[in-house]
Length: 74
Image (cartoon, rainbow, N blue to C red; front, side, top):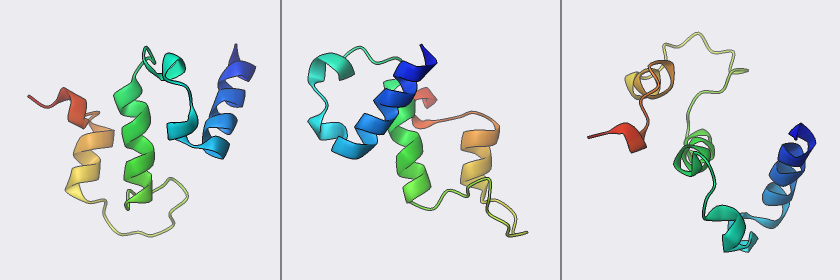
């Protein structure tokens, strides 16, 4: 099962989300989270290997440390 997940990630990264057939994407578990996290990383969310000693911005602490993402907002 894990190898299928890895292959799926590699294929998705190679061809792009828009090229994946809709029947694979329609019932994807945690779809909103899986789409939001890469966008956040691409738009400046600090990564684990970031060596800076700067404090994390409040928005990232609230979202990822306290596990609040956009799909849980009221």
